[in-house]
Length: 182
Image (tube, rainbow, N blue to C red; front, side, top):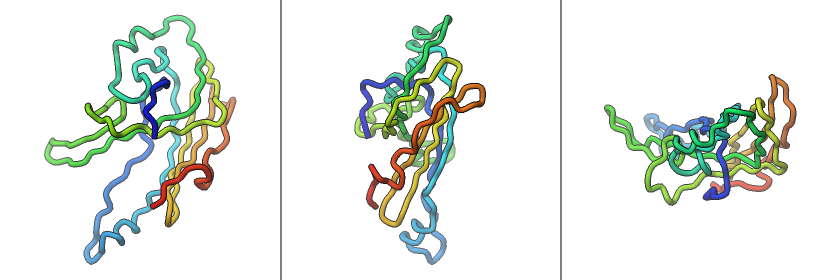
C-alpha cells in the first residue's frame, strides 16, 4: 500500500472484480458462510493511453482533474510511455437502499473526500515496459488464497495491432515476495 506522490496514472481505473458479503444460509454459522465463498479472482484488462497521457488522473490518488486533461492533450505526435507498475484502488458500496448509497472510494473517478487513511496498492514491474504510441497495455492479475494467506500475482503485455510486442514475467508467484496472513 503506497501514497503515490511521484506517479502518473495514464488511464482511467478499470474494474477487475467485485466482492459481496457472504450470505448465511439457515443453520450456518458465520465461519461456515465465510468458508463457503471462493475469494480467488482473476482479471485481464486492456487499455490504450489517451491523448493527454492520463494527466487528469494525476498520481492515481484523489479526484480526477478535467482541466489538467485539457491542458495536457496532444494534438500532434503522441509520445511513448514507460510503465513501472499498476495501482489498485477500490470503490466500496457499504450500504444501498431505495436510492440511498453509502460509499467509500479511493478510485480517482469516484474519490471520497477525506479518505486520508486508505491508499492504492502498488503492483510493481521488475523491468519497466515501454508503451509506444498506438500500442495498448494488457494487465493480467490474479488474487490467490490458501488456508492461511492471500496474495496477488500479475503480469503485463504490450500489444500493437493485436500482436504481443513485449511481456513481463509473472510477479509474486505463489506469494513468494508478498502476502497477507489470514
